[in-house]
Length: 270
Image 1 (spheres, rainbow, N blue to C red):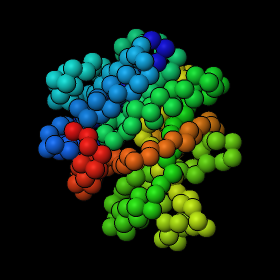
Image 2: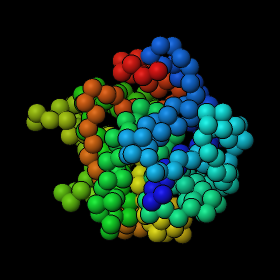
Image 3: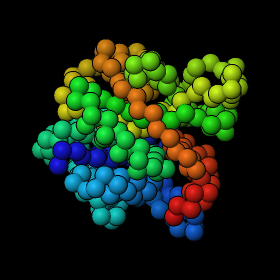
């Protein structure tokens, strides 16, 4: 396997404890845990890529490990000292003795991730051997921007937005809505806000470097792990993806559950 997909999952989330075990109702009414839906998303990506890709859940909690095994996923146990998903993925690779060329971090709070987001990221890394890390971005529609602004107005820490340069590299990621649109969804005929999809592909060398760096002030203030790369001068490639007819939203807060369930119903996902 030249590529592995790791789903990092922890029980002790500050904003949403036990989040991976939260249940979400599908289009026909079927209840599945967030972790199971994340594993399903990963399996769809492996299938679309033509197989040959390993898929694992990395966790420090026996309850999450039990749920992963219940849905037939392979588990890699990690320490409870991992501060974020990237650190957990790095430790999982080391603990399992894996040596892939590409490591994909499919975060366990994005059950609506279409498989082509993952395969586009893998394709980018394979086509650009000098890329150390890449992540997808999705141009928002007006509804998404309104949801972002509503979250911030209500004091909820919600989805992440990103701005990039003309070279296809991230300039900054934020929990605020960037760039500034003065509350508008459309500016000069276009939606200028990009949703950062919680998904990464790394080279093992980039992962190893990440674990040697200490969190910087921007990572700490925003609570965004990927800023550690930017704060240490390491470029992050952005890969623009599209999702025609689909909706994308992460489960960040309990209030996101009905929104995601509504999207599952709209798309007919069970």
